[in-house]
Length: 275
Image (cartoon, rainbow, N blue to C red; front, side, top):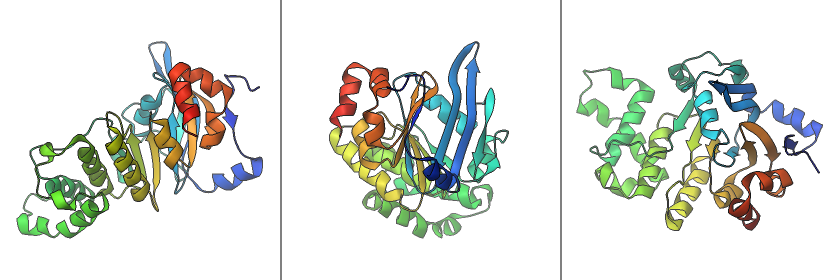
């Protein structure tokens, strides 16, 4: 039996070498200390281009802190972050975003008093730079709407394009947030708990949506719902107490004794029941 403190990595050395050439994101020894407490502890993470990669773990495992380090909302204490082979460890959040690393936040972040279309248009303005051209009138902004409508079609929101965003049900607000993220043409899309707080129907809808928008893109997501992870994740990294506990596909990590021990009780049962 593998030691609970030793990461379990599925796959051969040959497979690992092949995947190295396809990496879009890599961390080496990534760590974050807070006044003597280590929240992220020497994380080596490898995200392959074109994959949906899930970052899971029990509460307090360091998942969101890891996301904050990747997007530079926090500075690492130690370690490095590489994107497309370039060291971006010391870059600012805006620089990271310009490279195409775009994060969708855990809590739905929309402008409630604007329409659905206007919310996505703002994301598109940020990507194209038109948001800084204060003399751009409504006619100029209207030229962006064809792309906005394409994105709304992708997330099944075209029928509510002119609805006030604040009036949308929760699940559709999350779909709107994903559309706004997509407007910025992410090369790597980071989704933080995309199904949190949702009922079964919304979970199913958003899961299918993530799978659809991930085609031809790379997604790294923090997710607590193991049934969602089992359905769409190509690869999974399990964190416990800030360190990598296991890595591999769902079948491998969900059966690993150290992973079941870390989750314990009902959470372990959830892992086993999602096969």
